[in-house]
Image 1 (spheres, one colour):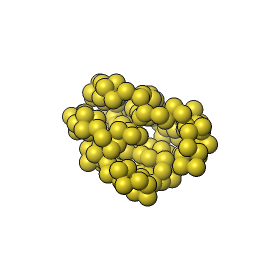
Image 2: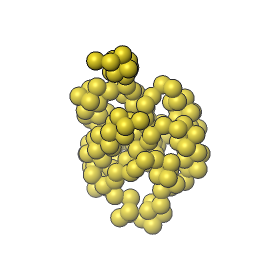
Image 3: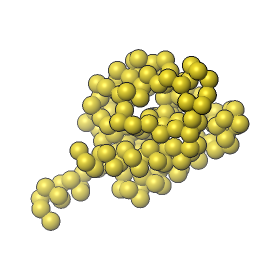
Image 4: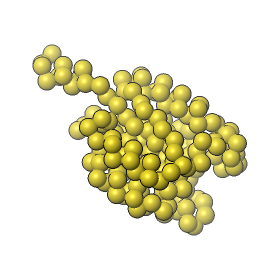
Length: 157
């Protein structure tokens, strides 16, 4: 094995996972839209999937836009990518979009519900343009598919 391959293989591979506002209420909030899966269950499944891919995760949930911006700004040189569910900020936050753009990290946006089948105001994502892709409408699997897609992108850079 070449020295270059050893250094890449030995490098700690980390993904920052950001859950946006109100996702701490999963399992109890609008179960007809979001289901009964809790954020703890999503986090557990994500960490298990990441371990199988040889990644570690830092998982954060915040109801505060500025805190999410700070997390994204601090991700450069610490993480190889960002998996984000901006939740309600998807439709309103130029600040989160700008932070994602400035980070220069590959990011994947995920949503539990299909935002394009919901209310008109939810059918527009301000943040997706700063991401390499978006996965929506598959419940908890949106997160798992997003992680798989993100790690695939990270391997190519």
